[in-house]
Image (tube, rainbow, N blue to C red; front, top):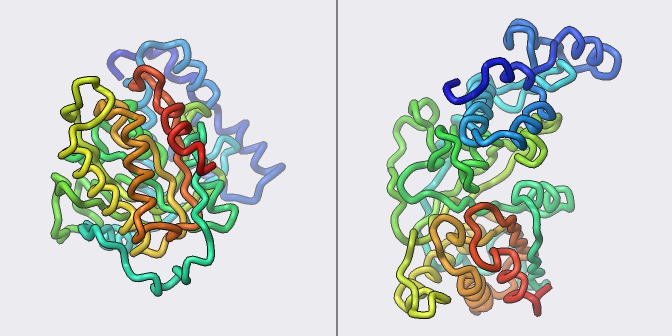
Length: 341
């Protein structure tokens, strides 16, 4: 690819003959890599070493995205031991993509819906310095049924996922088959979809059975031996909103409208039967929403009678990145929810 040193590109891969020998010794999955990948397999450690020493972040991320797209096309990928992992098939993805739904209701369902017994629990809210998908998998392993907030672009599904952008939504696309559910660029899975982008102001998009197939960027986007199905709620914040004179808060109108967005998000999670959410610092990166005020808006809505103690658990998984400003995003959320954790 342009911008990458061609002499270094191949260090991201390992020879499948060596991997096949490992596979025969330790695993029982099918060895198939040599023909499909030209005799090479992605080496996450080599890629990560290159990423840490490079300034070509976008190009390197774009390479990861292209690998993910190839995996999505065939519904399978190859691990570094040469074994094959099949995570889905055309029929299953088509069925779930057709159930990707634009949700517009700010009022949650009644308390007697399936999985929502009469508030015999108090919502546990925690703020963690963690990757959102890792947190979601952790909750799932504990027996919860989480949905993950996708801090989405309002205009384009996946935002700049093809160009290697580094925000959360693009990261989700690189690590999952979300592209097939939310974007479906070739209209292969839901050709008669009734709704389109732009996402309406007070709406979110629900997707289920999106498979997490890769580890985090910090782990070199390693392909996972055990793909994990996960549900997502795509909700955009207001980009570059008008702030108060002290720059610490959204102006009242935008603050109230942001609360309406949050109500829609929380209502959707309940409607689709989730008992937990993995949220984050919505709009507090590139969109420049003030973190402390956003945290307070979430807290206010979660305290409203229609939402109080409706969820068993909520995690705010926040990693400060290059878009974080001032005190970052993790610290303000931790402070606002200090009496809840």
